[in-house]
Length: 348
Image 1 (tube, helix red, strand yellow):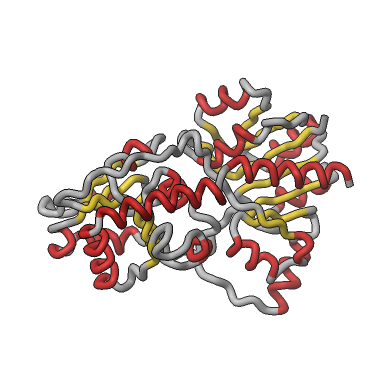
Image 2: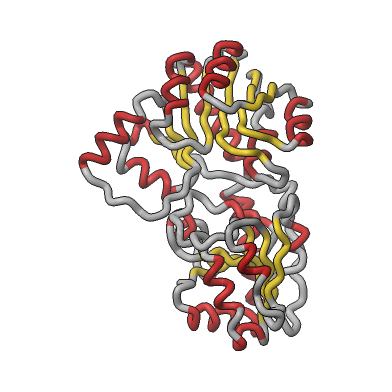
């Protein structure tokens, strides 16, 4: 039985699909798992310890070094870190195998040149593998690193948590939803502008789930903008998904994956996504959802009007989206492929 340490540079909250990954990871596994995390909701920590995890909070490199020495890991798996982080170098000094799952989104697509390739290849030397969570991320990493070091494993969602929700009837309003950080980079400012237009407000409402820098802007919206509803952060987003027809994903970032989009599709809620980063390869346009340029308000308005007039189109697209997620983004596929990497590395 190997000691596998997972190091996560996040505060782990309820409702996170990444927690689902951690929870299912020990399934059919003989290994001992240790989670080192920046912070974690108390209830989540108890659930992990109930399935034989050791869970520890760390605040510094010294904390990490102490835990690495305590547990003597055979493999260390980093999440939510960049290539070349000092914690990865520290891990390589104290463990034979170190891998990184690259979750980070890119603010913009970088220009690949010889200098960048050499720099990233050198920074990746301590890593035995780099796991890409989407085909977009895999392509980008393979342009920087030796392809033999990059492994493509799509993120997955727990289909027992995100079950199909029967589509609600379309009446006066097309109920639209955004789930995620309330920031300009995620395109929320575009949604606010779009749904503030009288020609949109007459037939569509926007439900916002999440926290972020635009919360104050949303709270200060004029009273007549009553078609924009904010919920704040929710542990269970399905509470709102039951009330809406579709989910909007207007991000300007080059997303590494797109959890909120896949979670929505798993519940039979189709999405309208900006075709950048991993989002552009997430599904087939007009089959599982729609792609639209949120910088062009008129084209988005026409698409929303088309969907509002076509309840059968909405229902059929949602069903096809759910079938696609079941085929491609089941979390158990992600777990099996991750175990395969662990076994290969531990047996080298």
